[in-house]
Image (cartoon, rainbow, N blue to C red; front, side):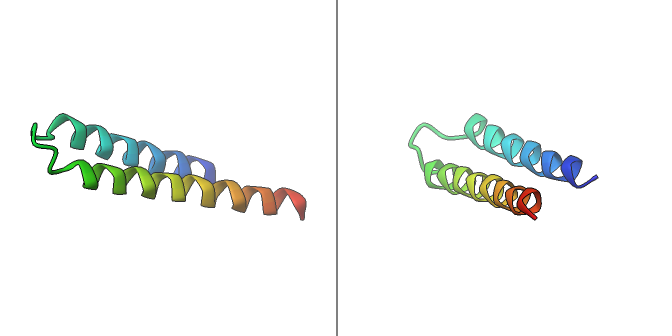
Length: 58
């Protein structure tokens, strides 16, 4: 159940990033927003990985 929730969050983050790329104007004004989205995704994935590692080690 928890794994499905994590996958849903990840898929949602990827979908948001793709929609930002798709609607980005050519002047690149949304580029910082895209990088913030990538950063948030990386943080979520790392957080999930660290949590799972700590579960396995216990």
